[in-house]
Length: 192
Image (cartoon, rainbow, N blue to C red; front, side):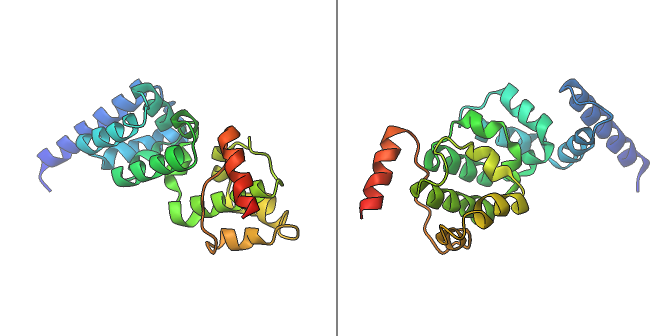
């Protein structure tokens, strides 16, 4: 290895550490180390592309930095997955973009294996009136698998056995129902 390449790597590392400190990370925290790892593997071009993807859904520069401080690894999500997840959260679930920003861990989850099955379970429980419509979906989806299963599968499997099929992907996810329009749509579906 050429000595010049080592110097360049050290300079790059120092630049990354400086940027992370400027963002307000505590150098003694685990997230500081995660942020270094994240910025070390992301090119500036990819970083900017991902920021633009979030901005297209209404996130500001401050929103992105706040989410990055909570979970630095969320910026390793591909631009394609960012757009796919944000589209799902905003257009299919009807969440505000700011709701999603509170929990950047969601970008580390699989849409097909974790998010849609979780939403399908909530859909079944809401349609049967077993859980409230004003449930904080973001935090429910962010719960670890064990906690989610305990609170929504095991707890309700006797009175709503469909939750197991929903979780296993055997039922189509339509939408979660929010507001008056959603309540009316749910009543229509229950009649048919």
